[in-house]
Structures are given as C-alpha cells and as structure tokens.
Length: 444
Image (cartoon, rainbow, N blue to C red):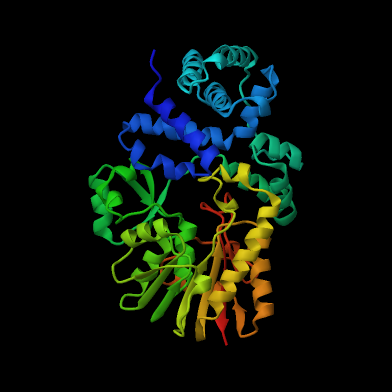
C-alpha cells in the first residue's frame, strides 16, 4: 500500500518546520502542495496543525510506551510516531491500522528502514493502551498551571505567565482557543469582491469584530483567482483592526510592512495619500510589492536606518514579535520560544519604536502594535520609549474605537473588553480573533 499524498505532505512539512524554523501555515499554502486534491489538502492541514497543537501531549503518550527516550529518537522517526499518535488519539474516522502502517512506511521512505520495527512496536503498544481522550483545557475545574499546561499542550512557563497576567479563567479560554481550528478571516474591498468569491465556491459569513471582514466558512480561498493574484489575503480581524486604528493622514509610514495586509488597508483608507512601506527582508519586500496597490512606495531597508527629513502624520510600527497571540494559527511558536527571546525582542522593538518616533510630524500619531500577549513586548516597550523621548504622549485608544463603532466599521458590542488601560488588547478566546496589542502615541 503506497503512502497517501496527504500523509507524505504532512510528514515533509513537519520536518521542515522542525529543521528550518519555517511556519506550517506558509508551507501549507506554498506552490509545492497546491496540486493536492481538496480532500488531501484538508487532511494534510489537519495532520500538520494537529500534531503541532498537541505535540507535548502526543510525546507524553509515545514516551509511556517507548523503549527509547524521546531525545534519542531520530527526528524522522519521532515525526512519524507523532503523526500516527495524533490520528489514533484524535481522528476517529481514520482506521488505526492505516495510521500505523503508513507511519511505518514513512520511516522507510525517509531512509530509516532499520527503525521500522521499533515504530511498529511502539504504535502497537500505543493502540493497546489507547483510551478516549478527555481534553478539558477549558474545564472550569482546572485551577492550577501544571494541569492546564499538560491538558492543553502548552509550555508550563507560558501558562504560568498568562495566569499571573490575566488570571486562571482567561488563561483557560486562551488555551482552549489556541487548540481549536479557526475559520480564516479576510477583508473585503467591495461587494464585487464578495460576489466573485461566492461564485468560486466560497461560503462566507460576516466578521465578528469588523463589518468589512468576512469569515470563510467553507471552500478553499487559496484556490481562488483573487487569492492567486494577490487581490485577497487571509488576515485576522484583530490585525485588520490595528490598521484601522491608524486613521487618516496625508503622509503615512508603515515601518515593518510585510506581508502587506495592514499596508493595503492604510492605502485603501487614505486614497491619494503618500504611503511609504518599509521592509527589511528582500524576499518579503518583493512579495509585499505584489500584494499592495501600485501607489504605495516600497523601500527594502531596516527602518532603523531610514534617512529622511520627511515627517509623517500617521505611522504604523507593527513590529516583529514572539507571536504568542497567534498560536491558533502558528502553534509551532510555543515549542520554539524561550524566555530569553522576550528580552531580545524587547531590545529590537524598542529600537524600532524609537526610530519611528523620530519621523512623526507635530500633532501626528504613531500606532505601535504586536501580536504578542507578553508585557515585555508591549507595555514595557511603550513605557520605556516614552521615558526616553518626552516629545510624544500616550493617548487613549478608546476614542478611536468609539469612532470606528459610530461609523459602523467596528461591530463588536463590548468596547470595554477591547481595551486594557489606554491600550488596545484583544485576547484569544475572550475575543474571536488573535491576541493583539496596540498603543497610540501622539507627538506634542
């Protein structure tokens, strides 16, 4: 029996995620796998994201029946074991014997033939010991960090931080949200765009935060002509909201612009304005150029090295961050991130924000944002920058949220829940979107 295309693709993607620090979501949408049938692509996505979401729980189950400690198992072998364990534990519709057989074949395919008997033995033991999982990550009775981390497959150190910052109840909701597949969101340019997508087989539902957003209920957006041509992109509603916070201006600077979703919104919201998009990485800058209106000027450089006397009345600094607010879409982050990484990112984020502040015109505004839940990347960066440069002040985001509500763009009824002090703060599970932070600074 040959290896199914879906399992072969999932195996390849998981290995690349581990070896190259690639993101699974980008690999799944890459050209290499676009020829998979819709069913195969769906199963590939299920397997890849499922293994990444539940990796620690799967590893614990494998370790219980393995004669070898997991750190001593070759990556190809461990990846095949994880794939089978996920199917056995979570996918009732897939026959267990098929999961076992194909994982054994994957090991052979990866030129680890000598490990095939070991894989077969481990998985047979796993099948014998298998019990229906009682996943209770959102259970009301979980009140300690260790249990929540174990059952929700999150690193303990991250869960402990979230409990300290948000409390146990909210942390349960974040963990629950992270573990469940979500409907992708897009932003509509106009009614014609929606009609086109519906004709191509997509089923859309209204956004939950924003009137101009849509959720993809059914269909494959990546197979549509609009997606292939860069006219439609997947963009979380909280990410869209951050771009809308920037508001109106005549000269707009986007400091870390790729992949371009926010840049596109800035240009759409400010027709006729000069929009300058800066991106450090050459390949990302080239992709950015294809995804945004031709009126936007793209500069491929480090925004910290931007040499210009030009002042901008609106600036967006959506800085590189840990991404802990996006674990539902990028679960691999939680297995890569280390505590020291937060300090390293803080230093970079502070430098970018300091640089951006130098380009704000008098009376102009700067939006600093991340998709992180960590204070080192959010409030602490802003507070440090304001202490170092008293020419800017923090203004309350609530007035901008109320304006978006009054114009009909913001449809989320509980505005109070969207703010934390003077900052924008969305939380996965509390809100139907990624976790984003934003601060609005004004030059006085």
